[in-house]
Image 1: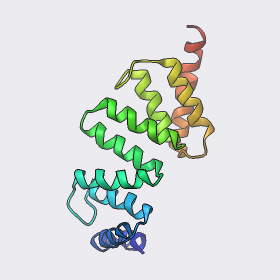
Image 2: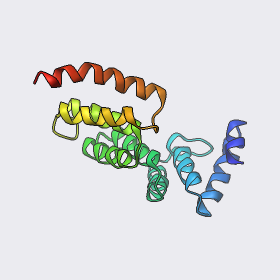
Image 3: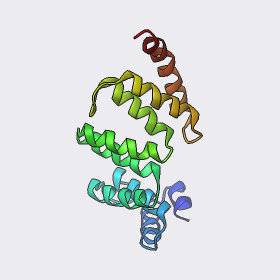
Length: 153
């Protein structure tokens, strides 16, 4: 019901329905409510509330909540926390998070630079079914660029 309201552009109604569902324990509503606060859909943008709802959804096993938390930390410039939360998402099978970990490892952001470790995360991203097509293509391109360099090191 909240999604239908959201799709119809009734963002305030959607936010209220998501709030009701989250209060009743729906982990999907928790995730989407976090997003509503994150971007200001049907409510004012509130990063603290977004973080709160994302963490609740993460505790219920939502990998995408962990990825969204990583993005919030990225916005704050907290690279170590970005890495830590993408790692949590990757451990739950999120291929997009594996790609992000590889990019952080290649850049040495929030963690010591490690092309060989990055390659492992790229392999993981390409072998999971939990990755969007765009991220899969990016991971494949990075893998093709990186694999020959690792072999010659």
